[in-house]
Structure formats: structure tokens, C-alpha cells
Image (cartoon, rainbow, N blue to C red; front, side, top):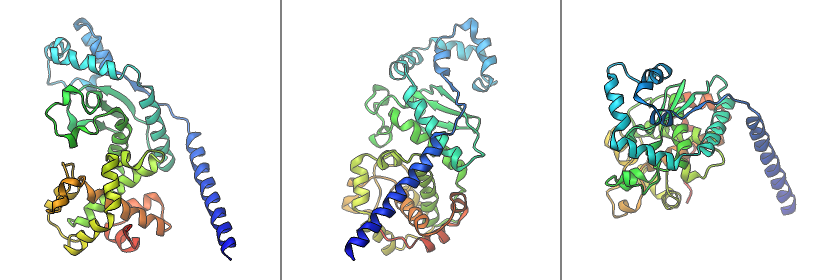
Length: 319
């Protein structure tokens, strides 16, 4: 009997792997017309006399309220010249990032055929880390000076929780997150659960669109942070339940457990050991449990209320 069960398990595993491989083969076969524009290189190499030509080529990158003198001064600004050099040293070759973005767009196009492939435009922003990636449907702007490496001198003075993901391998992750936000409706109520599931849906799309990436990298955790979340999943969930936070509408819960920060705030001694955004991690696990137990499409799940997802997820944290 045990032998039959083992054989059946192997058959199911093989079929499952083949189905996954078949899906990935279909995705890899999708042909896209991806345009990557290295605007920061063009701007850095522009002579002031060529500025009108550059403005005509990229009018959307030159707001009308700024006179030409602003851009001419920027061309010779000492800080901008340092940024230009640092970006060129780190991103003289953008091939790896281009290939990762191409694969991301293939996955999005497979699951959402109406997705229009944006032109990828690389820029600099004087380290505007709050806008590392901007997705504007036709364009995906990538601020390369926010991806120069965690220990780059430009980031001196910034807290570690901010700059830990200022590295080039997070470009595709951040791009996926910004695009995912366009597909996920906002929280449907003020409850902590609704906001957890909202972020869980975003993280789930990233998992579907970036299936080969390490889970820690996808969610923006270090390995140690992800290991903490996995090892303490049951205790985290118990804390939420026992403190009756699930349906609580206190906005501070979002700051404590959903937003970037040095750590999550349980108001316990272990706080300093915990990564931030543990509510997003739990939200993802709830959405995964729902998708595992219910035969619904990706599009249908995105439109499903947080409460319905939770009620039908039968979520049980790993021990």
C-alpha cells in the first residue's frame, strides 16, 4: 500500500512539474518588442547647443515650467557629473537587467494579454529613493543612481533598511511591484486584514511573474530576514489573532507591520530582530493558501474581497 502511495505521489509530482515547464515554455516563446532607452547617457553626453534637439526627442522628460538654463546648469553641475560617472561605472552594460525585464514582461503578457509593453527609460534622479521606479503604462522609468550598491558613498547617512535594496538585482523586483500596483485594487475596507491582503496580492503577482527568483529577493528581504519570517510565522499570526488585530482599523498597524521600517513593531523584546513588513509576508501566505484551495483565475482573485479570500483560505501558518 505504501509503495502504491509513493508511486502515485511521484506521478503527481512529475505531472505538476511538466505542467509548470509547459507554462514556462509558452511564456518563453512570447516575442516582445522591448525598447530600452539610456536617457541618462544621452543627457550626460549632450552639449548645451544640442539641448533643443534632446528636448524635442524626449519632451516628456523636460517639464515646461523649467527654462533651458536649468538643464544647461545641470549638465555641468559637479554632483550630477559624479552621479553620471558612478552610474556609467555600474551600468555600462545593462544587458542582464534588460533580459530580466524582458522575462518579466513576457510573464505579465501571458497572464494579462492586454498588457502593453512599456519603453524602459533609464534616468538619474539625484538619489530620489522614493521614486526608484516609475511606471506610467507607456514608459517604465528606472532611476539608476538608486541602484548603485548598498555601500555606495552616495547613500551615506541613509538607514540600512532603506539602502539594503539599492542594488541592481532589485530593479526587476521593483519594476514588478510598481506594475502589480496597477492591477491590484486598493484595500476594500480600513481593516488590517484588508491592507494585509492588498499587499499579499501584490506580492503574489510578483511570485507569479518572477517564479525563478529567490523568495527573499522577491519580497525585498535579506536571507536572514526571510528565515526569521518563515521560522516565526506561527508566532506572528498568533500575535495578530490574540491581540484582535485582524479586523482592527487602527492606521498605526500599517506603519507597524506593512510599511518599510527598521523592523516590525510588536512592542516586544524581539522587535529589533524582526524584519519590517511582516504583515505583507502574512498577507502573501493568506493569498497563497486561498489560491491553493480554490479554483479561481488570477484576475478573479484580484477582484475578490479580502474577507472572502480570508474566509476561504483556511490559512494555517507553518509551525
